[in-house]
Image (tube, rainbow, N blue to C red; front, top):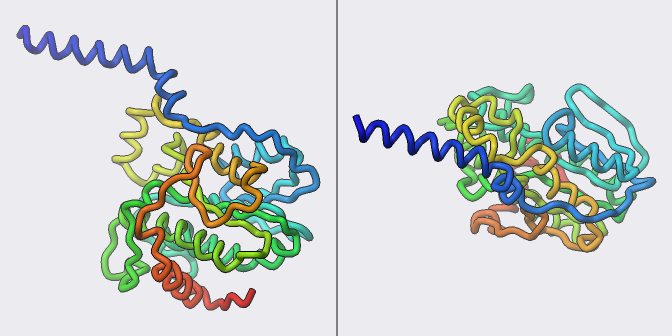
Length: 281
């Protein structure tokens, strides 16, 4: 009985300490904050997935800076004459196996093929509006990802976690390969890891939803999670930096498989073939 009492007392003490120190731990875990005061008057920004979470916070921040912000959410189409910043932010995480309308596995389709196609459609406009920036929201999960060229669309087997990691690795590889192809064009491309953020992204995973609920005090708010995307979009010191990966508003390491040039080019070709497009610019 005494042992049980001590265990319960210990749990209570730990819980109280977590509550008391949560604000300080959260402040530390929130990582970097974009300190740039850059204005974006006269600039046009397009952000995908901007109706909630870090996309919404990114859109709000850039709008306050004076930018004309186009929030590219579902079923929204807009014609523009200039585009200075493209933020590929939309994403899904660990959803059950389902296909997009085009027949692609959902996570690869939404997280990688969608941004790949959108960027292809807008690249001419971005070049004409240069200097311009492209920000691709990836994840630390890319470290656990591998591009399964033999079953890229998970038709042979499907694991929601592995499929998510593959799509986030694809984001990193896409950003690096696109940066290489755009060298000298005054259009920069960088990928970012926003951190662990309290958002709707984990809604498809019961386990992840439970974990995020238990440790919500230590997760980033959407506003904190948006900081690195904002930093890469506006920071003056990044005007010519391209092909890099960022986390907490600072350069971050990339997994070896995310630095493989052969894999990046092979994924580029496979993605182009799936979408039926040819990049000639």
